[in-house]
Length: 88
Image 1 (cartoon, rainbow, N blue to C red):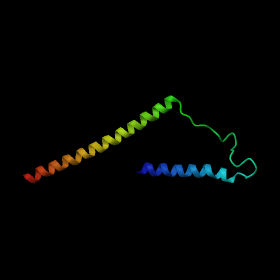
Image 2 (tube, one colour):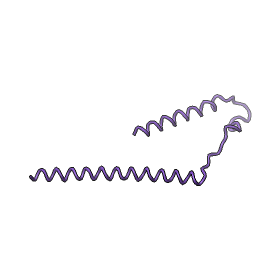
Image 3 (spheres, rainbow, N blue to C red):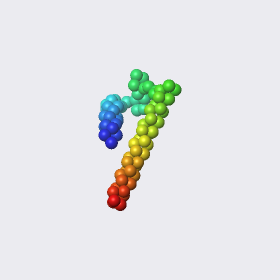
């Protein structure tokens, strides 16, 4: 939960930092759509980087799934123990 909030805050800060120079640019003929050449950059991942991101995401998903599994297991174990204690 905390990491989601931090991520959202970082995106908001970065979004506002990117929006300020664009809005402060003077409006003139031919400047409506184009941006300075040093600001434009294509973001492409090389195959190794993509592979590492995919592995990281898979590990996170597997960890999350395992945490849920263990939580359910603990709850089931507690309920069984409670039932056993009631019978005594």
